[in-house]
Amino acid sequence: GKLVTFSASTDAVVAEVTLNFTFVSSGIRCDLGNAQFDPGTHLMWVQWGIGVAAINVLTGSVDESVRLPFAPDQVQIDPHARMVYALGCIGATNDLCGSQQLAIINGTGVATVSLNSSAYGTMALDPLTNVVYVSGGSQLVALNGTNGNVIFNANSETCGQSAIAVIPSLDQVVWEHPNYLLVYDGATGALVNMYSFPTNDLANFAGYDVNTGELYVQVGPDTLVALHYDVQTIGNVDATL
Image 1 (cartoon, one colour):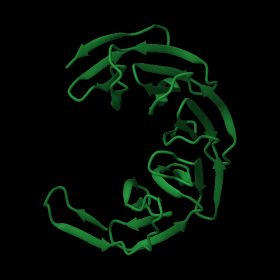
Image 2 (image 1 turned 90 degrees about the vertical axis):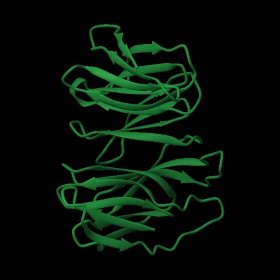
Image 3 (image 1 turned 90 degrees about the horizontal axis):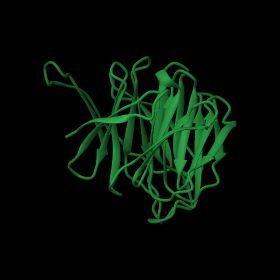
Image 4 (image 1 turned 180 degrees about the vertical axis):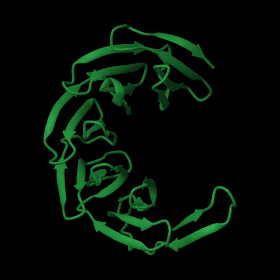
C-alpha cells in the first residue's frame, strides 16, 4: 500500500506516499503491482484493484488515477508516445481470466480492446514500432499501440502459460511456451524460428543483449540458457549455466 522513492547514491528516502485506493473484492485481484516508470514525466504507473495510477516519484503525489471497466494485472508504458497500456480481465476468477482486455490510455481518454481469450496473459511493447503484443493461452495478438487495431493474430497450436519478449533491433517477438520458444516476425506474424528444450518448465525471459545477439532464458528453477541467433539462422545454444 505504499510507494517509496529513495536515492540510490545516499540511500535517503526522497518521497513516500500511502496509496489509499478503494479496492474491490469478489474474485478480483486487488493487490498493487507491476509498476512501470516514465522517465520523461517522473511518473510511476502502478496497477491497483480496478484501475491504474500515476505517482510522481519526486513529490509522492498521485497525479492521475484512471478507473477501468476491468481488473488490470499488468501495466506497460511507451515513454516516447506517452501512452499507457493496462492488461487484465473481466469476470476473472482464480483460475480463469473470463475475458481478456487491453486498455489504451493516452492521457485524455481510454480505449478498451477485447482480445477474445479466457486465459491470463502477458504483454510486451516494441517502442520502435509502437506495437503492443499480448499473449493468452495459444493466442498471440499484435495491436497498433495508438488505436488498438489488430495487426495480426497468431496461433501457436500449443497450450500452457506463456511469456513474450520483444527484440526491437530485429523487429521480432519471442513467445515462450512449455518446451518451446517461438520467434515471430513482429510486423507480419510469420514464424521465423522455433527452439525446443528437454523440459516443460520454461520460466521468464531474463533479457536480450543487442550487442551479442543473445537471448537469455530461464529453464527450470536453476538453469539459465544463453541462446544465440539472428534472423538468418536457426540459432544455437551458446552456454548453459
